[in-house]
Length: 74
Length: 336
Image (cartoon, rainbow over all chains, first blue to last red):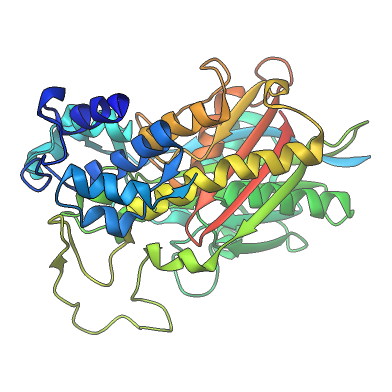
């Protein structure tokens, strides 16, 4: 999970200490570029592919983690 | 065996330049550095309002004729890959055939595939040559997606550029095939994820264009504009491209280390970075060319191959993979 959080911190351009389950996505440039970046990150860290439409609807990092647990193996 | 050999590749980019700096000024929250980092694109070339795929393709073809000295009268097939033709009919190949003054006995046709188009085209050419139907073929690629993109849709305007390429392929007798083998794939369930919904027979263009609407990310587009679900397309590519490479290598009996160059459709830096790592290809063999032209759809692979085309250097064994709209994909091995 460390690498995933580090990757999220890079995508949202914040300190990694700020990344946690409650991290609010819509207030941190949760746009089309961030969504595709998280898909690439999930593939790199977990070899899993997110459902893109469901990912775009996520509001927090906890939502992403829940989605990841259901994601298809890449 | 009778096989096709690539003798030359040339390209033509339109004059107008659209920089990431200029786009960053239009899109709040996106800096030029961020656009370049994620897309890999610093500049895109954009066709003028009165400049079409046939115009750009003609310029690439004339450059090839000038550089190689090939006699146009000896070309016996012209194939034009485009999804942005000048007219619903006739095809761009017919228009270009006339402009170049090719002979009446020269076959010509268009095909519309997009990002997998160049690999499909090489396979078609190899079929024509191996069957004895053609000896010297001119393969043109050109898409002008800029004409389909709403200016305030940053999800696609940051990626795509316009370009044309021309490839000359000649029949030769070789001990091994120099074009191919190829493998292909299709998944029409992905059609909705990269589409221009209006303008064809299913939904003709209305007399008054529909008002553009903002999507959940604030990107503006109307039904006559290009729509791309970037997340779905990225997931498709991450899943499909490694499988296509494995399928081709199972056919050829080669491993990734046996290829001098690996040339993928130049979709975006984000995707290329990830695919390079998944395929395990080192930087020296993984070809990139999108920083100063963008994702040019069917022209990305020939643009990336252009510096390696004859007469430059020793023959190189290349793995090519095109993938995208459709969904469609194709992989092939060539010696160039």
